[in-house]
Image 1 (cartoon, rainbow, N blue to C red):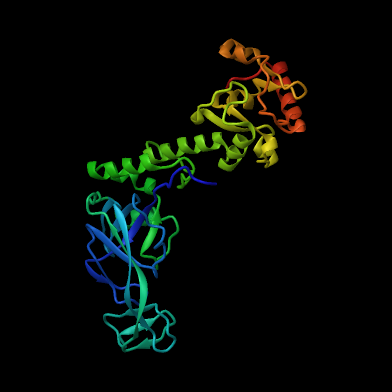
Image 2 (cartoon, rainbow, N blue to C red):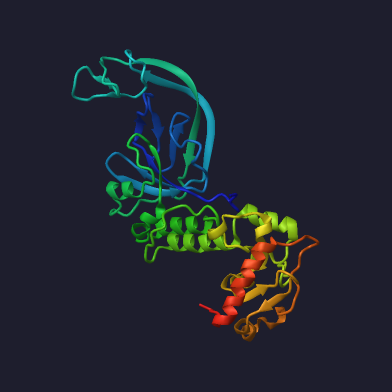
Length: 337
């Protein structure tokens, strides 16, 4: 499903002052309050983008939070250290034991073998918005926000909503959170389904998810627009923001996103159709509006003809089943809940 825009993500960056060792390389020179360096050997190296949020941490503390301004890509040499026995690049220098070096396979040695390779380099710049995190965001709190925990990764994706309650105690961090919320897109809402009372991130996700569900699957909607034209088939409304893809036979029952199982309806008429307060006679294609909906101001659509744009319209069997549902609502008195 295509997103309407690229939705921002949030990351935890592991950094230290000076050089840091990763995966057998000789280190990266970071400036934790302004810039983070990494290369194409690092997991998630292609996923980090401008507009994303970065929480910068060291081995012992959470240092700050920022919005990434830009990511500069280049190429350069990388000194890679390997185990002399098995050639593994995951080697670590030990500070108090001898031999000094050990690889992940358990081999011990005095010095690693070093070779130089060309890699794609990246610099994530964020100095303009960097601010310290509130002191109650500990490493344990940050680790609890990691979406796919992995101790070996220096760039980890996090769910910013899990840190929101802490961040909102800082005006500068609040500005970063609110900017993140404004950039969240309709389709790519991400995160968890757990409700968090008072969370502006979760509230934004909930609203956007509801809009996405109401519009239907993007490709499904586009197919219906190609078939029927970009207007409501009941009202003729052509305002794109109100035009939704409605399933004749509910998707939950049919798993059918074919154009024969769809209608393009204005958002309020979509709701009436789903509630069984607006029916379509499968033989005449005439619109019938439930008495409750007529009293609410929808009488103008009663007796109108479904707009088909020269096509054969929806699947007759699906329309018949929906018509039966509408008839049942007439008998029961309907529901506006």
